[in-house]
Image (cartoon, rainbow, N blue to C red; front, side):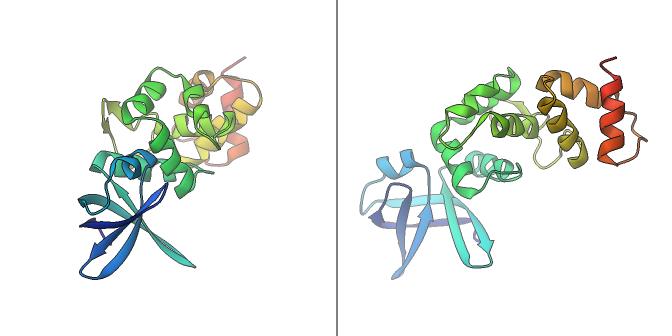
Length: 192
């Protein structure tokens, strides 16, 4: 994996920079703000994340490790790809993301082009339990099991708030079956 890159900026786009590494031009996708403030000919250092797909190798560059780590957290959300994760980080500061999750103001994510209400809720649910303070998070440890994320999504579809859905998840016994339908049935008992 390519963990970082440093070199001279030889080309700029709206969401990418090309960095010269001993004659090799490496395209690095970055936030719009970073691309705007970076000057041609400037020597720039980035923390990077290499995304390997069947048909491409794409390098994403970040000013600091925290941005890169949040980018990776956002990629864990169902329906959030690399471009949308980068757009979220470009539009919202890390502090704004933290405040939105900790104060349960999920509509903040809807300000980002391409993020609807459901995706905003998924992002918030995914990040809850991972963010522990300003610019700090618990990393890969999930607050819920993957099956519980689907139960939360089902409950919010039925009209319950994210907070109510999370409370219902806490009601499910730890030894309950991993079957989604069974866990949803148990979670619905919380509201009766």
